[in-house]
Amino acid sequence: MTPPPETLHAPLIVEFPFTRSLSPIQSAFLTGLREQTVLGVRTETGDVLVPPVEYDPATAAELRDLVEVGATGTVTTWAWNPEPRPGQPLTTPFAWVLVRLDGADTALLHALDAPGPEAVRTGMRVRIRWAAERSGAITDIACFEPYDSDPAAEPHPHEGQFTDPVTGIVAPARLDYTYSPGRAQTRYLHALAGRRTVGERCPSCTKVYVPPRGACPTCGVATTDQVEVGPSGTVTTFCIVNIKARNAEIDVPYVYAHIALDGAGLALHGRIAGIPYDKVRMGLRVEPVWSEDGRYPDHYRPTGEPDADYDTYKELL
Image (cartoon, rainbow, N blue to C red; front, side):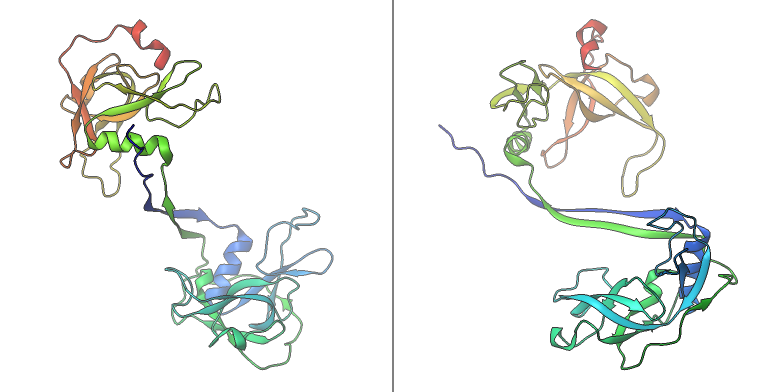
């Protein structure tokens, strides 16, 4: 018996910019950072929250009483970061710290520039190191740095009014991790490399899943029997794409479809080409066109066969 192939794994990066508008409180806070001013908000009980929020976390009361706090503060807790990652505040080893700024009752998370973990302690005094260029973002605080000083004066009211206030931000989101497709999809990917499409059959309901999932989501039992399907299939539903994706070398408009491969128990996704986009239809019979390296179907094209009867694929819509 041939042993199963080694489970695949590969690095994967999910990255996108997140654009959002700002409330008046958030706008005042970030615009204040641009102007080297740190604002908090006072609750009904007199606590000062930094960063400020729109609603009291204890009572849900709306908060609008802005106050200015100090640029110096006290470390309440910390953790050493020996290997900074891309996009973090500093490129050399640093400490993540929670700093309660003078006049605030809550702590702000940021980086502390220190020569080593032996130089960091709870209770140490620090101050903000402002970025040379500021745009109205949390990164306007480049980091904190050690600073031997006494606590500053109490917070004082601030109107939160600035020239050219910041009204929106773009926050980059990025996730780096190692992805493993598992046993079932490893076999599926190895089969694709041989220009074969292989699914797995549920021993209970007999549905063939492509791509395989390792278990039947309906019956809750493992799927181990491999079944080769296709290569031809039927378009069950489709959409016309009119917005070009970043870094995609595909001219719009084009068609993306659900394709039920012959012998499969559900449809998979695939791009349709080799036919005008406005001629694609439900029931169209298609076949795969493999990528140049032969590792996966680049798209599907019409086979020239008559359209499939609706009754043969209606359960796969």
